[in-house]
Length: 498
Image (cartoon, rainbow, N blue to C red; front, side):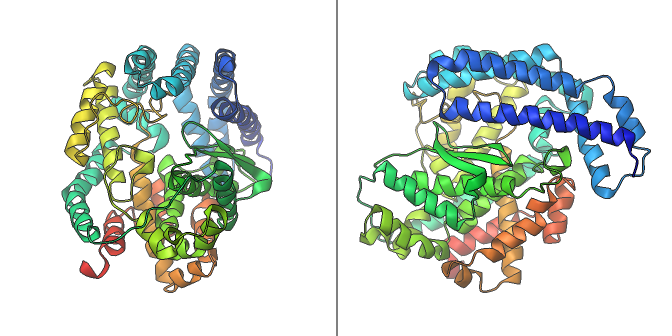
């Protein structure tokens, strides 16, 4: 079929994908392999690439091509692709090349310094770079806000969660805050009488890595299209054809790296199973960061911390880390479902994790809406950590407001995606379990295909064919329903006591 305008657009967006491919790999290298003194040059190169991407995306020919393509006889997937192309163009056309370059440079500079400043608990040093990141992020937020009639924060969140508004997030998170503290209290009371054997280290890093690779294999990671490395903050990067995941190790604690790898493998499987015929186009990319986090949390929380999965991998843990009683599957289950408020989000248990997210959401929303300044973050952090988790973080910036990579890089609006992802994941597994009532038996036997097949059919293969609400509706038969998360947490942690 002759579709000249649409074909011209696909050529442009394929070129954009190739630029983004190079940027993703250079960004991964910056975080995982690059020597420290390379950062200024790398930051400048990435900023230059961001400007090139922006110039390509705002080419004066694109609006006309989009209008003409809209009159062409497009198929359903092509029309969805045109919708996503227009969204990308509209977002980019509102921002100047100057702002794109300045924000990229400031983010690279702040993030690189943060890696050292966090270790040194250096909030004062961090604040100098962070203030510039906040200033430029606010400029972006104000520009998008004025054009779209959204609050500044909502305008930024829309980049990660298309169509979501903080009024919606407030409802979801407000509901969580009404019942989660009581549930945490009940679970902690119940667990007070449980005996949990602590694993005896040290756990050599090479053995932890070998264990992680074996678990990635069980989870279906394609090693011919990706790899595992180390970084300051675990992440999944690269592109669908070459997925790069990272973790971090401690010889005193194998739990951090193992579950971090499970989490990032969930992200990776999503990327590796996006439809290859459209992966280079906007319709072929992941739908939203909430949907992306739903994959990592399907792997880490729904599957990874389940007694059935821990039964499956218990022999591997013993093989690589030693045959000690603490690695028996029942004890592993008690370890990985232990509820105890802590300082670090990525190490948090399943029940207290949402409190970490809500805290960050409330702070970054206030920061981008101009209600607080960058210098106010530590005090507000301390107040909310005490209120939500009864944890004292005063003057402990390393384990407080400096612990995440998102804000140094300017990723304001991302944090709600984590708890939205947990809600989506619980809803997926409710659907999967309705189809496979013996799911736990299958998982313990090593048959994870019911989970992977369902995710592939309903989420991975659909990419951005549908908007987020329709994607979830088609997958589960209903819109996002937070009751599934509440039911899952009660069933797992209180069981018959509910």
